[in-house]
Amino acid sequence: MKICVIGQGYIGLPTALLFSKNDCEVIGVDLNTEIITKLSQGQITIEEDGLQQLLDQVINNNYTPTTTPEEADAYIITVPTPYHKENYECDLGYVKTACESIMPYLKKGNTIIIESTIAPLSMKNQIKPLFEKAGYNIGTDIYLSHCPERVLPGNIIHELINNNRIIGGITKECANKAAQIYQTFVKGNIIKTSAEIAEMSKCMENTYRDVNIALANELVKVCDKIGINALEVIQTANQHPRVNLHNPGPGVGGHCLAIDPYFIYALAPTEADIIKASRDTNSNMPQFVANKVRKLVEKGQTITILGIAYKGNSDDDRESPSYSIINELEKDYDIKIHDPHIPEKSIKYQEAIKDSSLILILTAHNEFKTLNYEELIKNMKKPIIFDTCNILPLNEVPTELTAYNYGNINKIN
Image (cartoon, rainbow, N blue to C red; front, side):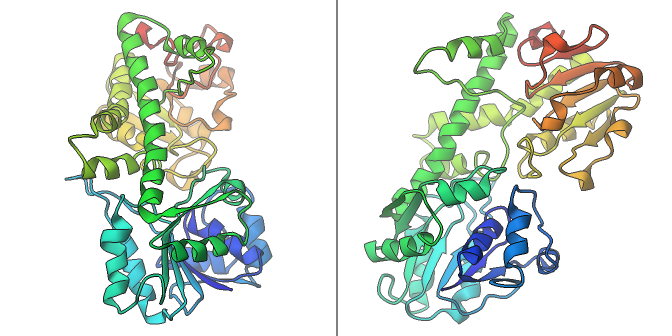
């Protein structure tokens, strides 16, 4: 089977390589020539466990990176889907462009799969008509489905293989055809349903997590106001067998949680009150953090940012709340950034902490969980830590350092 995967990013590349490893001929397409050049040279372009080993196995065998689609048996589209900030609607521009790019190569019997996260009813109202306009009968000439990814950065390869897979067909036969393709390597359950159910399920999975994170972040603000340790509240409440409060943080990032809830809200803004309120709560956390920083450090001082990726132990900085915090603090402070997973956007650690008045932890990288406190005391101008990821055990911090997290921020005044 020959498969053409459009988009060689965080989802498209691992997907393409897994099909290649399982004896499919795969064409990996991306318009970014730098990405294609590096992949052609055998270099991965994203940080992900096991990905380089996969590429090493298939680069001179079943996998070919290129900027142009080719004729294939199946086409899988994994391009980004941002949202329109003025009305929160899903921007299908990249998806439609990808669909148009494969039109000259389509033939009867092809299967087209949209993996990109899209708003409910997008397949029926916008994607399906593109192929019908080109003269294809969906379900007999070609087979069209939405099969959203459901993976966690840092564990993508394992989850692509082992997670249950939603197959949302425009018709039942479309779902059957797509299911046959994923059975090439997926060991989880194949769940066949309609396209609209698959679309809404994917959006709600991420909305569920966004809403629960918002609840934890709101708890932090409430406890800050009334002088209670929010982290201890969460730890205690989670002893209940049916309670699982999430971890609070500096905001929500990534290409899923920070965007997908808007797709639902845009379709029913009057009804989606909780969804929008949760998005607002999480979107306002960077301002909450910046306001706390201003109470800790006088204007004109140096602040060290530890972490710009939105998730720990990853180089994925899409929609990262760190950037909103940095943009706000740059108005009043000299900002130095260190992220060991994104070296091209940061400086060395020793340089970043030199003469700093505050260490602001914004990403839960393992490297930040065991800081050398003596080094900080020696090199910082004013040894203060504000850990918005709650990864440092404050009881182990020496008295020469002042440390805060979401458990004791009410002491910042």
